[in-house]
Length: 471
Image (cartoon, rainbow, N blue to C red; front, top):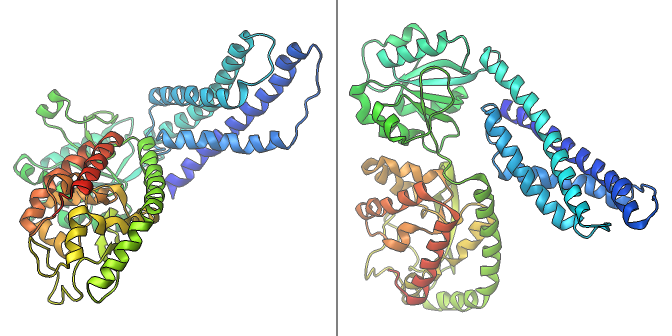
């Protein structure tokens, strides 16, 4: 709620800046540009087009700022980074507006185009950046003077945790961390951190603790003897909408493995879970929707043929649905053309295998070409899935996978997909061990995902469909 309110302040001022800029620029064109071309002054008429643009164009600017990621973390802004981001977005936006709305203006000579471009660029930047600078400066001052703090959980309980806690609490300029408690990694009779903040229990319960205590930041400060568990801890935290920081080893600093956050005093490594830039996330969702609608239209004749074939092949429904686990562990109903006989899992969940007698004849063909998955374009439109992403699994199998590979939880930080790198490279898994083996491809995708990577996977998937290289 606090984050939403603060973002609203930035959004309101950004909107007003864009509206003021466009209104003044409109008047400037009428007063300075058009009379030169016409040879006489003309009155400024604020017609309906002007008022529509005064609403639509600021919304265009808000969309650009949103896609740049500006509103992602309103309390942790660097004024230098803010300057660069504002300048870059302003340049991109002005170029778009200039070519869409200004280039067909009546002008006396082409130098007036340069003049209009410069005026629009300058006004938009100044009107946007000055309020941002003021708001960010005030916010940073409130953080540094401990008037604004963020609920923070310490992972660690002894020497390292106490050392970090004391240093951060003794700083004259605060970093905004408000330690409200800690969790321990290994159970002991007593913990040094209990002298300073409450003990919230074992790290195994950290997801529940984060939700109940409204934790915004987590700092991992465990002992050297506990380092073997750091991967387990990070896996536990993956997908949580909190900032996670750890005390770096010298090796981490030397190789520049992770970005150092701007915390004053003791350096901390910030675990960055946002691999894809915000604009790519928006673009990915846009393409998901557009391509899914297009696919459903183009595949409609094939849908009809498959529906008839499924119905004729064996008694039962045409579409099969059951529960899968999606992003942030949210369950949803997934849809497929039925490729097995009815009641194939009456004895409990069972993965398919080669020459599986439960699969119908048409089911074998659909699985080879992946056509059984095509109803999931509807899941994509609903927002449950994406075109590209790790394949969603059932809770029954997730529990078994996590026992062998805790890092599977990383996959739950993104929307599952109709196709995935693991599905393309490995195919269907026949048992949990194979699911774990396939996992490495999906982890590689998670840690390197981009629009280009998605495009490559889609191309490979189309190749699989046409060559029938599925299971």
